[in-house]
Length: 265
Image: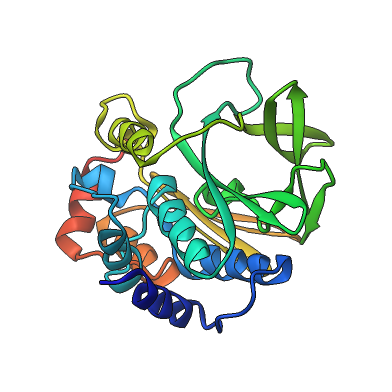
């Protein structure tokens, strides 16, 4: 399927028209994407093949409603932004969660230039991910009580940060280097095949909606709202199946839900 046709179906799934490449339009695309196209690790947990070519991403994320994680969501988003006329650059990042560590390049993001400004666009980080494009100028973006910024912690080393407990918390760091799809294949292979990878060992799912964030991690389902969080344990495969289908709008069979639940850590 041609990229232009995939873009038409993508915009239909988000209920958005094709518009000129502006910052408000970019933010609308991000907001609709993270709300309507769920983030999840069902594929890695089931040991499925997860090719990264654009038609495969389209069928998996949009047509089949199987969700995905950063290499899938941000791979699709990158192609859609390029088709819509945005100036985009592929970047890879290291997830650090506010630690002084040096993990592998297992997170994919997109650098978008709008006018003279550059922004990080990320629709594949799960429940803690940003709700909009974040400027490399360092100016914070505040939406629904959440503040994000891109901070140059060291010369040439940029951190995407979330305001947490009154201080800035670094989610991941990146450098403005040249990467290609082959680099993504390496990080993707580790992330969905290596026995120590997070998504191989944990079932996660999320949707970031206006007013609430739905988040599942293994045997717990949480709904996060400004007025407070609600959490409940997942007691069995039927309950897991109902949550995945009804709360996350994922296409999962009952036998798959049984297998996922039986192997939860």
